[in-house]
Length: 89
Image 1 (cartoon, one colour):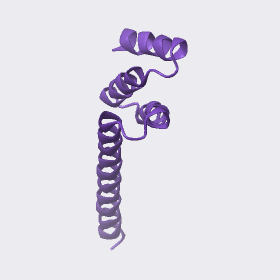
Image 2 (tube, helix red, strand yellow):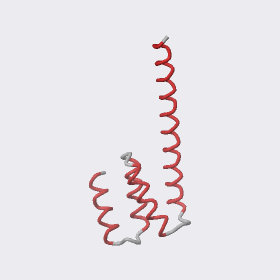
Image 3 (cartoon, helix red, strand yellow):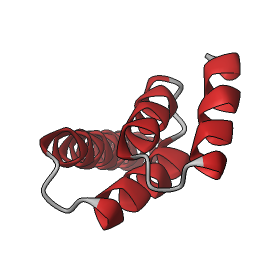
Image 4 (cartoon, helix red, strand yellow):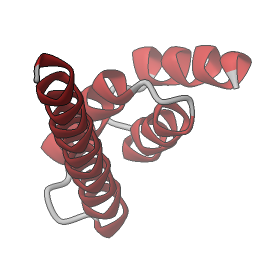
């Protein structure tokens, strides 16, 4: 994965209009949970082609990950608050 990311970064640097390279880079970033980098790669791909279905699909996937992560953090905070309330009694 690390070597693939390095190679795709080189491909993007040499061919900044190559949408597929941005998409593959974003996919690798998603796979390695580097969501900020994935979002940046997808924004670049989206800027080049706003209607590409793969880019839109990956962007949707990232939004789903963000939503599920936010839900998880909210549930965790609620559980922690309940535990704190029990201890304070």
